[in-house]
View (cartoon, rainbow over the protein chains, first blue to last red):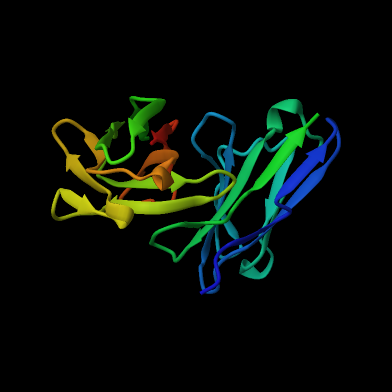
Length: 112
Length: 114
């Protein structure tokens, strides 16, 4: 079966610009996650969706980050405006409602 | 809330030697435990998981881990490593009532040399 697809793989932007990442989960997976992985650290959960509803966004910096999951399938994570400290790999993962999470390859964001 | 501590940030090891990566967790509720591997510029791949039952868990690529509830540990082992095992390894925990909301450790970089 196809895995979790993410795009773009790499993105370089200047601070204060905006950026968006896209994720297509594994077909049939109701749960979708966005993780932020800063260099030298483990991934940190930003937001969890169940179908198209938000389950947990307690770690999402809502003043600049937003995410949506239209029709319970694809998801977009946006940062506006970006800061230097947002440089990280953004990982999308999906799972059945209760089950193992499968990760995409991630989007590496560099803010300069 | 849960937390995970990986005790070694980097582990150098010679090819065909054994390796052990240490992981300790803290939680006030029952947990599931995982080990993931991340190759350069790749996403996370599940090596193995402990959900219940036998405390010795076998995973892919010859890795195994042992869950020790009294010591709150979940150490990962491989008896003989290959060059291709060079990667970053992450221990993760989730509570049994919140599948998928993984709390990761900081990772252990394994460097295998000939």
